[in-house]
Image (cartoon, rainbow, N blue to C red; front, side, top):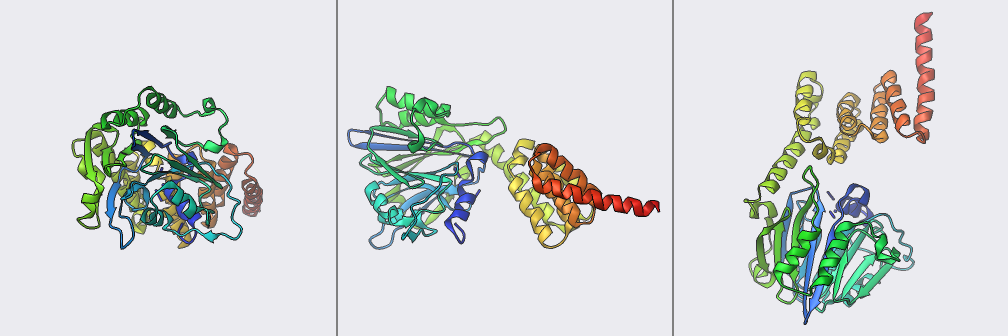
Length: 411
């Protein structure tokens, strides 16, 4: 799910937190209830390894809870003392229309639910009061201690009580035939759960292992959580290593205080995970150098910084495209167009097939009164996206401007 998976509106934050499905990796989640015991597992599939687990005590008449997520401490998932578990999925856009006369959803609605609700029916009663605008690209799965579950997707609040249930990045309400779900890990996990009804931690771990994801450049399952809703236990795994585990008992942890832990720090023996973490953070730090005008205005320093950056895995660098654009746009807002150009050149280099990257660079050149280079980049943008109307208009205007300049020189 989820870099940031609501600032003034819920829509804004959820876009940042859960990220659109086009740019994300599919997460996976299951529940299994046997003889009154419910187990829930979740694979958090993403590319940011800076993951966190934290515990928040409840106030009077509130439940305390454990949450998991990233270094922005937005709860991607968690469990409360009543044995209510949730996690979120990044999804394609699904319109929400049932808004008339309903209250606006608060930014902290997930924590509010975890403080107040015991069962999924409580969650449903809570959510039905609210206008869910802002959740158009998000889906949530809630499971309670009885084994009942609630899927929150669009205007639909779907409850179920199957003995086993698996969910990934698809909308259940839109599926007529399970064979049309083109998510191999979903089918693998479902087959395994149907083959054996076993709530042991070893079996539940094998389900999560079966559904984990891995990209050849490192991204994939960043952490895994398995919850024992009856015992109130959390089993935590890092970076698809299912041989090492940290176990927490929620009630015991909440007796201490509100505190957080850095998940990678709990698993120093996971070399692949630690290497990915170090590479990710090194690239993130390198990009911060482009916030310095001194570097961007010095061609030698700029070339050295850029050369060092591109010695890294380009696929890993590419996931920072939003951050690169944010830095470039900050220079545009300061009217420092030459600095913005230096940053947007990085975008073009890491995404040579992106018409938007060329268009953004072209706009910076145009602001910097470098019409010839603006034209070249708009033309490249149109080559990649012939339907880019604004680019075509800019090209026509730039050709007229450059022709006048050439005619003036030749007189």
